[in-house]
Length: 407
Image (cartoon, rainbow, N blue to C red; front, side):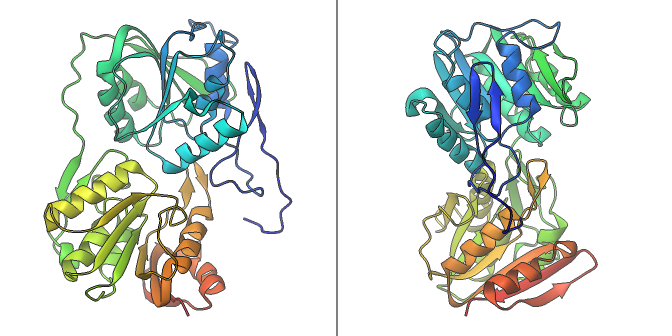
């Protein structure tokens, strides 16, 4: 992101009940990515009976229990929470895997002047509502996460439940529709409007979709150090849930040695393989696993427990990098990081930069940040700018492992 860019005001989100100024989280006045898109807009227009579609329309939300699944930055939740009484749900629940999305929702609700109690915010790990009259689904990138969540929500759906999904046309595939059909009932799609599409599903309580296949467990390969052959637990939506990703594998081959008593952070922990490897190699190291995904943090904890026992000590936190993870400055000896370079469908280095700056604040003088990343991302440039130093520990044609030391 260009630090010289002019600040940009939030792009107004047009809803059937008025425009809302929404932002992503963390809020950055230079951010050019919107907190909503045409799919969010299409769904709300359909609910209000304004969409240019021949499909059936929903106009009666008042008095009904509405659940919003996968709301990316709170656009749908904020719009429904601020709708006039005739269109406002009796109960509004948001279910999200993303800590950042829920922080954005809280900020956008406050910005819109909504009652803080207007929406109940649940994570994908929480017990879902007992009854859902209207289920609104923002289709996630992960088909596995969609499967897991639809299976968890299916018992709350009744024959009169209205089920509507939305997404951009590039996000809705035949496999997406088959999931709705297998788990909830007959499914069709709307015409595309501004490259967005609706999913319309009619619940069939006679369906038996079978057991939930998540979480998924597998044994790691035998040539990756302390975690060779160990069990990994992956909840749906966790990055590379069915195999060890090659970036993590490369980092495991060059993992630094910790000392007993060292405070070690697995930042962006995913399923926790890296932090678990440190714990196995260095009994007595103090481990903290951090990720913005609730599914990932649950996976990391189960992976850690499966390999070190139920009573082994470690901490597990859902947070925005280390910004709100309650980690004091100058308190950490080693941070291990495989940063993502996507935010939803957008490619961005903003997350990596927040991880690097948070790591520098948390590290003690002499503490180290180890990063694995795709070679073309040029993380060494950012690390030298931030830490004043960066060394390449190892590299291959695709990945590099970098080390920066806090002076």
